[in-house]
Amino acid sequence: MKTTTTLLATLVALFLFSGCVTVKTEHKIEPISITVDINVKVDNALEDFFGDIDSQ
Image (cartoon, rainbow, N blue to C red; front, side, top):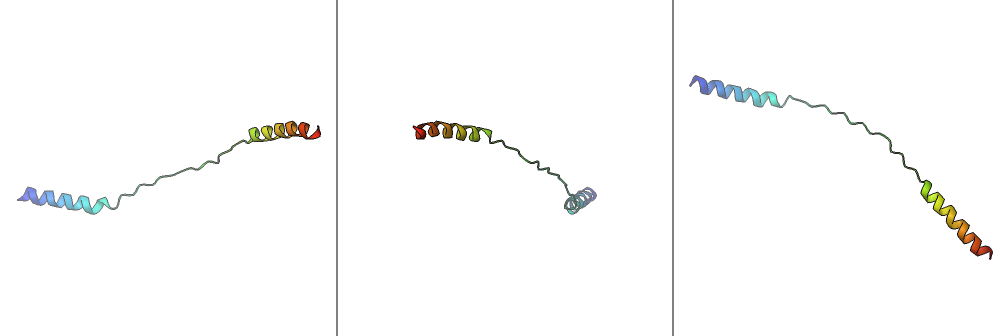
């Protein structure tokens, strides 16, 4: 009987104190840099190509 009481008391204590555990996490968000050089080069090339056609 004493072992059952001890086991029950231990389980009750575990359930009571398990809600008090907290976990702190830290997240770091870093900026993302994207270059758009390709679009500018293609746009300039198209302007040069069609500019030559329009001038003719």
